[in-house]
Length: 179
Image 1 (tube, rainbow, N blue to C red):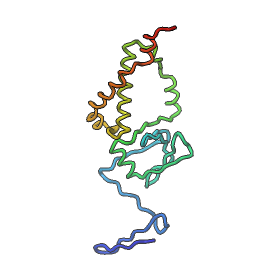
Image 2 (cartoon, one colour):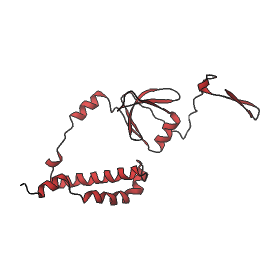
Image 3 (cartoon, rainbow, N blue to C red):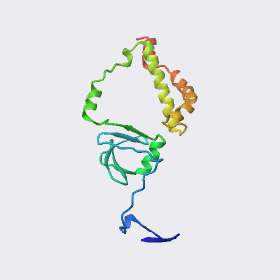
C-alpha cells in the first residue's frame, strides 16, 4: 500500500518495503553516527547476550546467539549506532578465532586457595566491587560506561562493603577446627 503525501514543490511517495512496491532505501550516513564493523570471529554482547555476526548488508547486521545457535536476531545500523554511542555494546574482536581460543587455554591459572592471604583479600575486594556493580546495573542505576561508573563509584564501594563482611571459603576453612 503506497501512501502519497503532499510536499512543497511536488509529491513524496512512501512505499512499504515489505509489501514489495519498492526497495527500501538505506539510511544516509550521519556525522553523529558511529562507524563500526564486526568480523566473522568477533563476539558482540548486546543486553548481556553473546552474539556472533552472521551477515550484514546496507540495512544492518544479523547476529546468531552463541548459546542458542538456531536463534538469529537482526539489528539496523541505526539501532547498533545508538547502542555503540551509549556504551551498551561490548565488542570483543576475534574472540572466537581458533588461535585466540588456544591461547586462552595456555594462560597461567592458579587456584584462589593457593594465593597468599593478601592476594586472596585483594581478589575478594575486586569480586565485591564487581558484584556491587552488577547489582546496581540490574537495578538500572549504572551503565557500562566510564562516565556512569565514575558517577556511581561511591555507591558501588559502599555496596561492595557488604560482600566483604561475609567470610570467604578460604578464611572460613582456616578458622574452623577439623573434628
